[in-house]
Length: 236
Image (tube, rainbow, N blue to C red; front, side):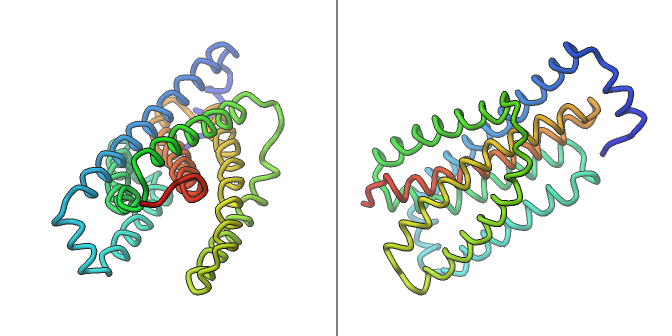
């Protein structure tokens, strides 16, 4: 994805030109992420109002595992094979991932009231926006907290799996709060990482970077939304 000679030439740009390049790259990241969120929202809304689809999910519980496997496969395909994919192919796979995620998240519209979903969305958008702005503009190096956040994320996943068997409301509350804090931190960290990568990426590779960055921030937003919904949402 990167060529050292092109990289050296790229880094000789004037600071103003480099800042403009980074700004344009970040705009593409946020645009792709926003479009993916819109695709997911409309897909989830359609699926939740489709009697045939909901009936199929209820009668074929294995379908959720298929969707989970598809999501993981798409994430690994985009992240792991980005150098072999064209920018267009990577983008299409990303939006396909957004569709699959929408098919999974349709249950949110069935479990929570529209008012709770709307309220939580705006809380998520505000929190995400604030932390992403912080990650972009802060002069503090957030790379040190990255490893701690990923270790905490692994612990969060383990605790969530354990609680599938325990059904503890206390543990569920702790997991929800921990999830919010972890993804708040990851939002700032991912934003700074994407900005740093944009500074070191040749122009012809910006499209692929935008897809990878959008995928990272999309996952941060979705997970932050889901954990906040477990705290603020009122189940139907």
